[in-house]
Image (cartoon, rainbow over all chains, first blue to last red; front, side):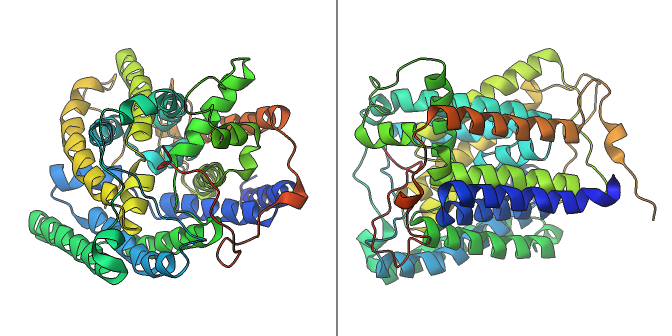
Length: 377
Length: 67
């Protein structure tokens, strides 16, 4: 079986791509390929968002965080000129800064440390067989759907107009300020990190480059930035609708655009396609490895309940924050949205609190056992 | 070096990573089946251009930043 596993995994991916191509056309097939790429790179290179946010605080390890800034900067360097040159065909991840957005990002930061995964991380963790990630993903789907039901109310609490770096400083100025902002953050991280924990490993350099390439391809092919949360909320709405509940009366799903999307196949939805690809890509990498990673430790019963609840909160907060680490932080900053920067500050503050809460809420059944084997940054 | 399967290091009462991974993919498959039953059939003649850039079409996909 071992000798057949890798060819079978390749056939599995090719079949998925062919099925999507046959059913939904070339653009959907391209987006599945991009999603597979994200999954393979994130899991294969062990590039994440949640771990580095924790490691810079607890271990003074800045390597993963620097790789994130590099990926965002590389993406921005290509995305800004593209968005300026093709404003009618491409769109950035633009959203307003508001009370609910800031609060949502803060709560998201807490929850992501509890489930040990952000938007993309939860998909990768679930696909790679992490039981916490699987539970969190189910919660994320439910939470992001529930968030759509209350989004209008949360947004009505007060928000600014949509501000972009390009709108404030011009296309060129916006890009330079974005890159300078990332360099300034990198300087803070380097200052904070211990001397031996400043230079990212080769796999992280490679991952940052590949993630940037895939993010730009996503923008070019889909016409919009990489996102995660919308697709998961749509999946939740699909399940609810299939159970016989009519969502036409809700403020979000009742709008013509969302109602249309709700009745169309997920194979025509951009974020659903990349999400599916991402999960399958992570699964393929997990099965590709000769040595399967160990499962998470057995936790006490109350910890599993906390994880399930945290998953719901993760999805709900991401929805009202106009995105997770991907849609708001990565894509927001790399396409010039001010809300991406505000999201980063609020979510990082929440993440620091989540790091403190984690050992209190998640307790291994066997005293002293690590919940998850840490991956070197 | 002989290949070593470390999955035996999992806590005994938890499913291994391959099992959970298969469960996740199975959930995806269920979602796609449910979606195929509930959704309007895809019209291949109405498929968008393969690449948005250069298509002369405004982006029509949904995103997390939609409100």
